[in-house]
Length: 77
Image (cartoon, rainbow, N blue to C red; front, side, top):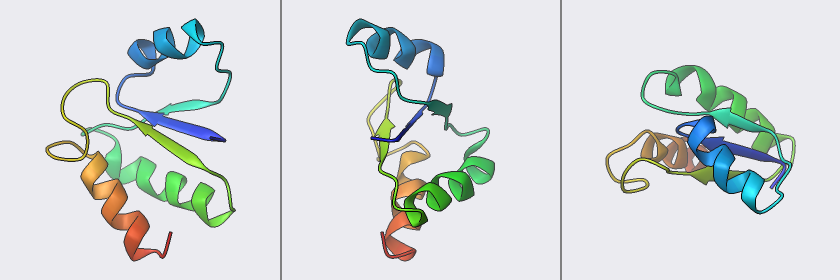
């Protein structure tokens, strides 16, 4: 992926560093989802791949990941 969206960059950073993954990571959570979704959708529109990491709960069910995936589908990604 060219960009990683994660709930807590500090928590996900431990995993990324462990595996030597050096990809930009941005926080994406309940408190900043409305601001970050356009940034992520723009990256997708530019043809970049985006990974979504859920490090605090069940992914895409009760977290802002659901809204991101829905927005990505609606945008045709």
